[in-house]
Length: 118
Image (cartoon, rainbow, N blue to C red; front, side, top):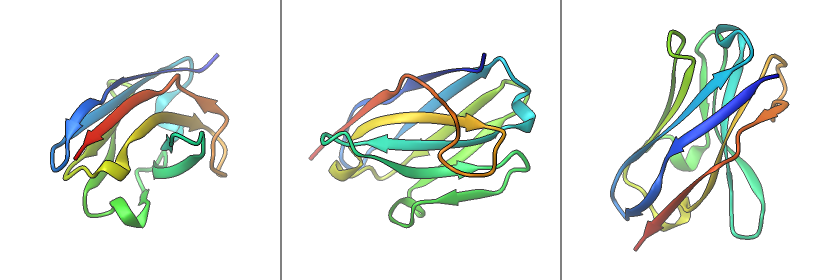
């Protein structure tokens, strides 16, 4: 059973930074495609960033110059570095993982909250 545990986030002032982490167990981390999704107050979940098993990254255009997705295969950990945060970045961020090529992938974390104050 693949398990994903997120951490990080919290309350951040606009213009500030934070980093989300997601530790993944129960599968060969190196072979997983990974991603981050954001759920807003209307419970709409949308794509933020992805990194493939080979390290290719994709980011939502509105965050491309502010966020960075990365992973550490040795630590089985996925990261989302979030800089120059805006109030519209507020939401619950979910780690997403799987071996398939199509996003969203089958496995989800429990979510971690990011609240950006103006």
